[in-house]
Image 1 (cartoon, rainbow, N blue to C red):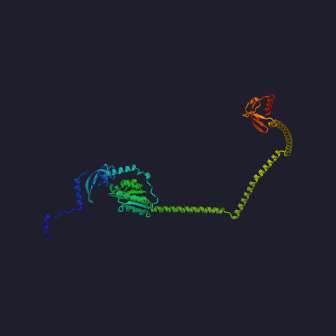
Image 2: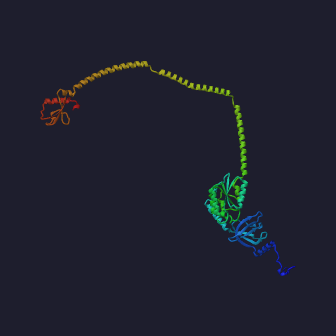
Image 3: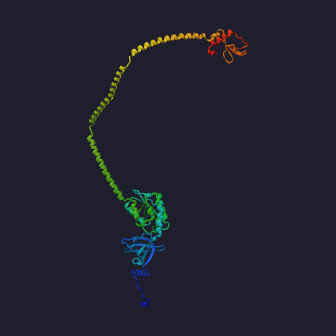
Length: 470
């Protein structure tokens, strides 16, 4: 039984649209409502496909919209936009039907200045470069043989799986130490810096990887903070930074010791493949074996030469005996030759000395004769001198004042010790000294009486007195 509700045309069901039809109608509605319009914004998540199309996000401080610029239009742009560029685009608002995404199709693009984030990036880069943080002279080389690798990234990041896969494939012997940290979001820069400082303090790895997958400039902004750049520069081990894709550059890339295009490239730069080490060891072992073979061959050749030159002990002793005899003869000649020369020279000197040697016998006879003549002469002279001396002694004895005094004479002197020879030199009452043969006496003069004959005698005695008694 059919109900009246089903048959009533007022209650007929509305037409059913497919999703495709709905998206097409919405796209036409958007295109009619919004003709070609100039829109200003900042480039983010820019991708250049292999087909030549450009895909990116155009945003401002509060919103964003997906954008596409097909190859036929992009080839006339005159430049390739970069992350953070501020641009103005002439676009048609539409809907991408396959996904139902609202987007804009760009017909033309022109520069509108550099984005705010990119300006902050450039200012920080210039300031840190002026401080010498990016100086190539401070960058350290990677160790030749890496035993352990540290990784600073998020445990949930796809980049970690790529790094671990690359390390396992290239160098399964390397030990991996993970320093987990968020790589985007609030306070992510401080947490990344703390993870780098922790790895630096622990110093348990040979090289440190700081990595993250791709994303917009906002997603990668934690690696554009100064605190992260300073932590990388102060790390105690070489640091490799692999953040984003090949076209992504961050401040961390410039402060690192080495920049990698991707996290996987960072892992490949950090370690040398195990196969390369094994190949190098095999080549070294081959070179060593060849060198040992050459050394053994040279030693065998030398041994053969020595064996050919080797003599029997008897022949060797005979050669040594002949050599010893020759040396003995040479030594004897060397010793005797100087002795013979000296003996010949001595004989010549003796002959010359004999010719010039005086006649000692004649000289001795003449010397004895001279001695006799000298003795006789000395004896005669001595006798004469003795006789003269005796005569002088007798004269001296006769003139000795003591003898005069013994004959009863005296020597008179005044108080000053002067010898008085005349009465005129004597004053009455003056004390006088009389020197006699047996001594001296002090006398006083009572009166004076001068006699001519006495005065003459006194003068004579005074003249005969020696000068030492005056």
